[in-house]
Length: 273
Ligand code: LER
Ligand code: MN
Image 1 (cartoon, rainbow, N blue to C red):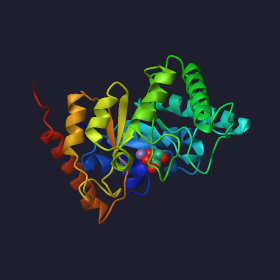
Image 2: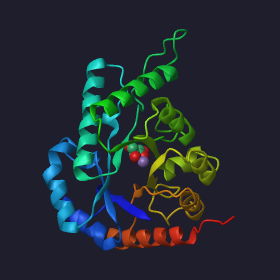
Image 3: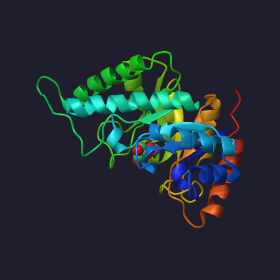
């Protein structure tokens, strides 16, 4: 199990201390989130590298924020966001991170409804496909993947299920574009999380972990064993990164959550036959 945690969940005065805590608590990597920085993440390369070296932990992945979503109605803003995504992909490659979590669009940003010529959904799909292909071209030869994340109905209108994200992956048709399946959003949108994961097996590249109430795993009512069994049967080799609230004393609840998740993973033995 490749267990990671976003740096914003960890206690510590600076990034190095946070990476250090992650290692102590039993995590194998850190997902670096743009929300945690006052300026663009690529400006923090030296700080991130220092934290990696001191802790011995890799950066599993990078996660963009809402103002980075790559589909936007304003052409200048779109250009800027594409350049930002390209920069993040290059940073991911420099750091050895598996990929960049990115979203096409979320409220309050919308695209125009050009009916009867084209409705908003079709326009977003076509625009997202072009932008993703362009980001791939501008990072040709790179290894970092783009992890497309569906969000729940209260946070997104366009991409809500892993099936919709798989459609977008197929439209781009490049192995560097994969699905980021977030267990919290899935617990709202998917009827059966393991079945949904199995139905998009070819495209799942990265996982966000949170319980049903978006608290630490073990603090809600999500059953982690069944989805983990699906992932193990799919031979999932990607990272699972914690993205959730942290109740109680982080120094106690974070190591307990890492332990709980490892036990769930162990218990999720693939069914034979
Ligand atoms: C937002 O709810 C989320 O899950 C993040 O990973 C993306 O901003
Ligand atoms: Mn997420």
